Length: 553
Image (tube, rainbow, N blue to C red; front, top):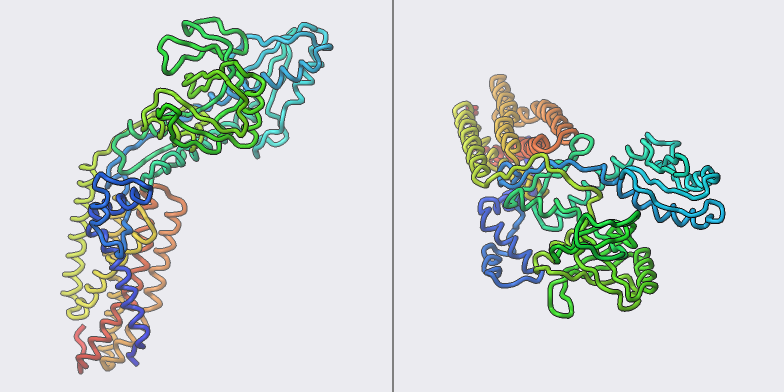
């Protein structure tokens, strides 16, 4: 019997209304976007600059979730970066010297005096005065080696220790280099993601390409250079003992030392010990602040390990200068006045408020483990994105109009019912996209256009079945009931196979392919819902009102 319970009718229309209400903000995109940005700024404690007026541009009681526009629609910045994994080898080798020195000093009676020798950046050379004890010393150094943490390097160690005359040569093993490369790229990927998220950009695309490259696409950002300013700085912070000052970069530093330029004082260089006391990796927090003179600065706090090392060093070196080094530049070299317990302090320099804020963001997100070489950079202007949106809109309108006309000419009144469901279907798609926070790209618009064409397939199956039942002599009510009943299995089977394809595209694909898969998958769900429930409900309501003696489908 052609009958739908009242509670089902209420539920169907409620779901349609909810979906259309969620899609409504996308019809007022600039206004709602300004409202959302202003509301977020006000919640963060900012005021003025017309924020209150912008926040009032959209009612607070209305939904304000928007479909995020991808890079090809909104414009933004595109970067392809190559991670300089070799930088990490040099850092690892430099960090080994204090450990090797302390280890051999404990055996000075046997190995004699110890001297660091000039060498290539990929190796550590240590000379001992007692040549006869070279093998014993090498054995001691081999004890510093650790197992390689990787599947391919199982059973190997991270250090290779050899001897040449009275020198011990320490290098990284090939297995450790491979494992280090993998860790470095993954760490760089995560830090880039954290830095971009700190700035509050919408739906960035950050993914690995190949062995050592990272693709970064950020919609809505002004230019590629602006994006490089956010992620291009390694922000490697270290605290190094000061050996002395120099007048040029070519000054003799001595083994185990390095010459580093001053950031604020032109022509001034510092000779520092290469081995740092504590590094930015041990920071747990960094916030913009002001020093005692009211100048912008950055306050920081170390974890327990870093706090202990920082406190011990300041207690033992009162009266000595201590350099704060950021990306191989000394930003300040204060003299230690007293013991600094607790592991917190402040970085001062000639900062502006914006620079101190950006530095705090970089330090808080973490230091990049290696430098980035930008192989490709593009700024996609919003006018190109607007062209894409306009082209997509025209395609949707043409497809929509073509389907509406075809359905009306083919099925008359029933085609009109299908058209009403199709309009609801498109609204539901945008409502779901807004609810899940999906990103709409140009391929995503193609998915919507495809969904519009596919959305009427289920209705076509139903209407053709109803036609067959009418020709077989069934009454109007029975023909409609059997039409939906017999078409159901075909509708479900056809859409399940397409939905599986969309799921596979989403799982295996990336970027534009995922955007297409999302809109296609959501479109299938809404199409089945509108065909099986919404269209049927409209037909039932029409039948109950008109009670036709015959059907013309």
